Structure formats: C-alpha cells, structure tokens
Image 1 (cartoon, helix red, strand yellow):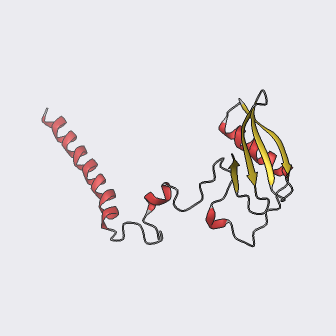
Image 2 (image 1 turned 90 degrees about the vertical axis):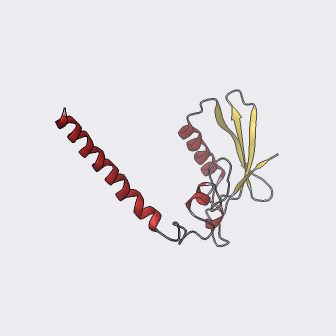
Image 3 (image 1 turned 135 degrees about the horizontal axis):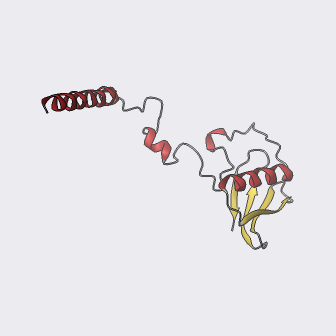
Length: 135
C-alpha cells in the first residue's frame, strides 16, 4: 500500500512540475506576445482584425491587396477556384453557375443549387481577387 502511494505521489509531482515548467515561461513574457502584433495580440488575429473578411473564402486579406498586384484572373480561373472551394467544403448541394466578365472588367460569378436556383452572386476584381456579394 505504501509503495502504491509513493508511486502515485511521485508521478503527481512530475506532472505538476511539467505543467509549471510549460506555463511559467508563457506568463513571464512582459509584452504578452504582442511584440510583433500591433493591434493587440494573437486574440485579435483570430478575430479577423488583421485581414479582410472576404466572405466566400477566396481572398487574401487587405494586407496583400496592393495597387501593383495583378493576378490576371479570368472567368475560367475564378470558376476553377470556386469549384475547388466548394469541393473542399463538401457541400454537394451547391455548384458554380455562370461566370462572366461585366462591362467594367469585373468578373461576375453565380453560386447556385443543383437545380440552378440562385444562392449568391459575387463580383470579383480580376487584378486583386477581392470580391463582394452583389445584393
């Protein structure tokens, strides 16, 4: 009985010591991990404050959309990208509908159901990849 108590208490001490060894250095950092994050730490990045909320998930965020960027997207390429995103998400009820270029040079892509009912229409900038839902 004493042997079991000694083994259990020794294991408990090692576990508690390991937890303390891992957590103490994290609390010792004075800047709280925000040294390279100007807007308030890692929690802010997780809330989307460091990138653009791009909706369908095709964009790259505001920080990468420079004036000199030109992705040269075509309607065919946009359709491929959207079909890939749908395949990745595994929603078999949706598909990419018509994808074409409008008079302003933007790409208009339609997301439809299997029976071709319109779900959403997106306007995509062919240079930056920025997109928004048309309502």
